[in-house]
Image 1 (cartoon, rainbow, N blue to C red):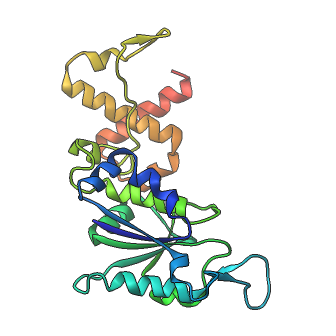
Image 2 (cartoon, rainbow, N blue to C red):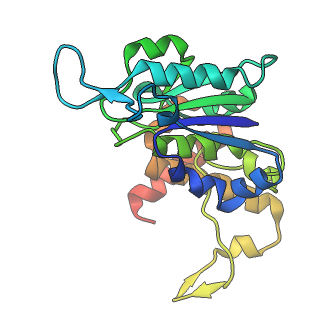
Image 3 (cartoon, one colour):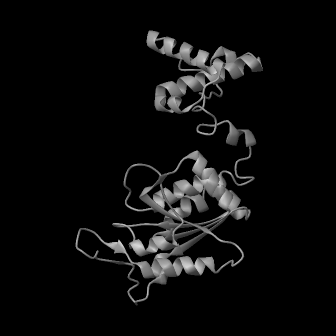
Length: 248
């Protein structure tokens, strides 16, 4: 996996390049993350990358020349492969787990981080897709890029050691994940559910399925309208609704 990031603030990516499981994968050369300072592609001695918008209005707009020069230079690194160019923007498609996996399959991403009022519209001819991490506005695309990189790189072999962790987690299965517990068995009068200590794997799986359904019902009930439930899942959902309404 190779990811090239065009940004005004390369140091903001130290949280993924220097810390955690992704940084370890970077050091092991399983993931290549290259940071490109947009100012290095400016024409003038002052390294100007923004200007006032035509037609007036508040704020500044990122100029097209530095961005397009950066994208073109990065693409020349490997003429045999075609990178997928992403512009992080609140106007883009919402990033979800399905999209994360699609991006992982691209194998080579160029991520453009916007700033100020955005980029000159002519840049969009060099962009394959606009992506948003949510319906809200950030001061810049760097924070969103970190989220995208973290999500995509988890699929790279060896980043997440337990394969089961990639399969049995929220947004990959039908439901949100079930509650997790670890030692000690009892803390501040709060005890681990006895069924998890029983050793009966079938009962544990059924319990976890029901609790995953409960989590989804309580935290993200709108997701249930998008899920095709099996007969068992319908039965468990009915039980959950009855229990929650009765306060159990």
